[in-house]
Amino acid sequence: MHAISPDFDFAETLETLSLIATRNPNFTLLHLITVGEAMVGLSELLLNLNDQSLRAGYLDFVVAAFMAEQLKLANGETAPRSQGVLPLLKTTRDDHAIKSAYSLTELYRRYKKPIFLSAARKFFDTFG
Image (spheres, rainbow, N blue to C red):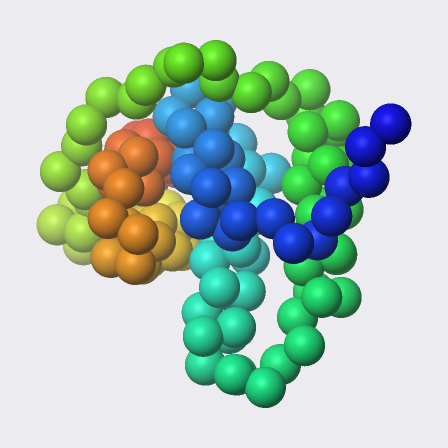
């Protein structure tokens, strides 16, 4: 049996969650991604922060979400490319569409992975 360690790679985890969101956008994934993006941002700003308890709590959130939502990992799946959603945001007042677009655009800016823009567009199409 393998122990789950809070020393996981945030970028890889958020990329996987975003890929799943392109085929199953829901509130649980939206909040997993936005909370994860906020934690990455805080960790970058608070350099002396011992984030092990935050990471362990986030990992518990991810595992609980996978179980509750019966999420499945994407096996070799790729998402369609998207140009993003920022121009579309002026057409909505939905806080979930705005929050997810902000977080996923920040993740794209940070990691340069197009999957984040694809997930942002899928969330916008679902909630915007």
